[in-house]
Image (cartoon, rainbow, N blue to C red; front, side):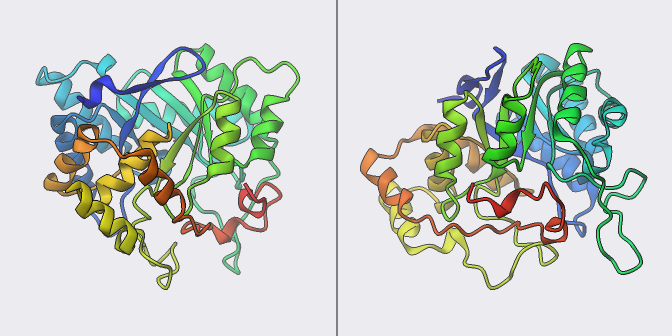
Length: 323
């Protein structure tokens, strides 16, 4: 099936493509690679592009999209573009400024989806990761509900077609859903989700509230030393996954992606390799049996690669709860 045809309806009536191209890059990778890889992704058929202020590649992502529009390959309305409100912009008076800063970098008038990157608020300012002399993260108190009200205004202003959240646990989602005077509920919750952290409880909760679960690190994370324990197991090396890949004559990565799509999860995948970018979009060409889906369910180990320990001291740190 053509990826353009496989879309998921959001609670506000808009549609998100089931497979997205992620643009996070390790620091050592030059920004120019993001520009070229995003162009390759659009050429390969990706129409859902996921970026964020904190990735520091919004200019390149915007350039890639605009160059493909100029070539006549896509129209702006063909692309579903996500960006994210960073933790230093949580104060209500800074939210729209955060989005406008991203739009200026992207060189676009609106994003299709704008999400709160994390429930943890950090001290406003120029620094992405503000710290004190001891290297401890400088937090801001932050009221999720007040931030959300400012997000609603971004939607009303036409700067974002849809609004959602990322890295929120069930309790934090409920806080917004139960907020007096709620105008728009979050359309999605973007979280780490892969075979070793399948998020089944959070997925069930989100489905019950008509919130789409969007998965990042869907192949098990890029294992950047700065963020990930190097002793943690590698998802794509799992022998059960390897055997299933042989059975279907697919790669372990494609089996992992297919698993998410069949659960109703929107999957983000990133690669700088043209071969892999083209390969990832083949995920629509086969299906897993329900028996094999159950086998893959059984691989869950509740291993979270991105624990974001530097934010564990904040009142809104999301990963202390079971889900």
